[in-house]
Length: 411
Image (cartoon, rainbow, N blue to C red; front, side):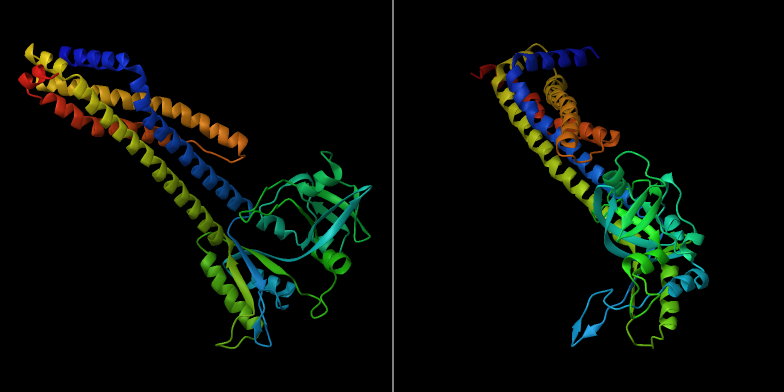
């Protein structure tokens, strides 16, 4: 035990004598540890943000869109032809066991006016079930009711972005806004959701009863008075989503009289799967960033090995003297190994501080969400210690097995 303590003291004294060289040697480890912590934090922050955005779109969400059509050999995109109706939405909710709720929607751009202010936004005609499907809550007031839809009531629910631009921070409930020269009473304001996984502002919207939106704002489709732009569907559970999609496909093909072999005139998208793919990409990015940053630790380890080999050469006579007065091979090995590990550990501690500071600066100046975990700090620190042992062992072994006579003759 005394030999171990003595070896540690000698190693620390040697590092203290060459402070500048020790500091420069640690620089590689400091940069490596800091880079690992910062890069993993950036990747974890991106993943957490995407998870939050996925949750904001609603749980177990499926969207049904109108199909495409061909014109003179040219295939137009999804939604180019009117194929979905309010009756389809009612049938989906009533006849598909794996579906909890279905809400038809229509959408269009409008200019909303209040007093001397106005704002361009999207008006969306929906039913009360839409609120449940999208997991909306109310910041002010109440959502409109089924009776409002049946009566085509002139009532509106504002997204937080719209409310801020028209009313500032005040509660706009019961105020009157003008949409396409039609006065609407504000029923309330939705709790903000922020950006969607596709980057759209989910709060820049105004929700109207679907009957009101069709009859008084967006207009009736001339081809089909009950046509809708999409149907938002909520499955009864995450596990039932595939079954719900299959049931909807069979029901809609039957309702639309689509024969076997013919293409569907609708498109069903599992939005959860689409956005979970983005989440997986963010996780891969996090791992990739961490792996790239880890290369800096290896480079730092090579720097430690290089300096330790130089140190062995410089202190060859010292090693010979220690061997001559009775120092054993393991004592010399321990001395130089302690030096290497100390450089790594000190570099790791400083690197943790620098990495945390870098993460905070990135969050502040780049407006990028970072999320630091204790596990990433622990792994970076442990890896720095292993680097010290791995790259310090060869120089330490070389010093320990020097021939005492050759070492004493070394100039």
